[in-house]
Image (cartoon, rainbow, N blue to C red):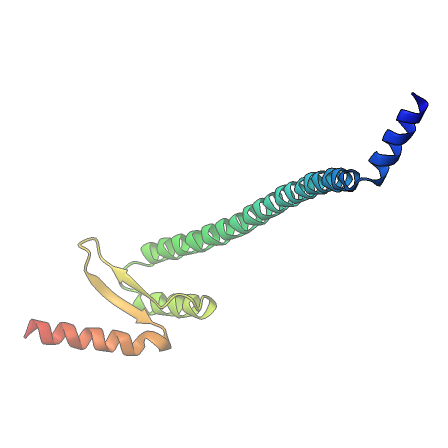
Length: 140
C-alpha cells in the first residue's frame, strides 16, 4: 500500500496535469481579484463623477439665480423710473452689459409686445442694424 501511495504521489507530482491545475486555479483567482478591483474602481469613479456633477450643478444654479434676480431688480428699477427717464434706463443697461459680456443686448418691450428700444453691445450693433434694415425693406 505504501508503495502504491508513493508511486501515485510521484506520478502526480511529475505529471503535467498538476501544473495545469495549479495554473488554472491561479488564473481563476487572478481574474476574480481583478474583477473585484475593477468593480471598486468603477464604483469610486461613479461616486466621484456624481459628486462633481452635483457641485457643478449647484454652482450653475446659484449663478443662474443670481443673474435672474439682478435682471428682476433692473426691471423693478425701470418700472419705478417710468417712461420719462430713458437716459437712466440706458445708463443702467450699459453698465449691466459691461459687467455681463455674455448678454448680447437688452431692451424694453411694452405690454403689447412691441419693442420700444434696444441697446446692443458693440459686437451686436451690426446685427441690430442689419435687422432694422431688413424690417424697413419688408415694410416697403
